[in-house]
Length: 164
Image (cartoon, rainbow, N blue to C red; front, side):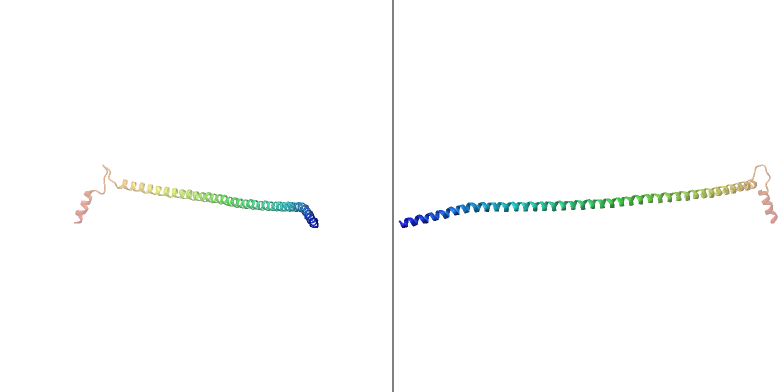
């Protein structure tokens, strides 16, 4: 009986240990689960705060890129506007210089035309005077029917015969 009493005591002790172990396990996994949940929650919070940080970082990067893009666009626009203003000013200056040069050339051409007209008028009047004087000289020296002449063939023959 003693063996039976010992066996039952051993069995009872084992049962108690199992029961305590089961209670411990029941408590431990719960605490472990709570701890795990806490860790998971903390990890989630960390990952959420990391995600928030990353989102903030991305947003900051995006804003920085947008600011840089806007600044670059503004700079390129101002360069284009400066270039356009320079082109317009250059064209305006060119046209003003062209108009001035054309006015000078027109004035020089009109002066030259006026002097050429004067030269031609003088040449025409000189030619006309020469022609009139030539006409008058030719009219004096030319033969007119019924008019005695000093240059007749007979006179020339007389001169030739007397010389002989």
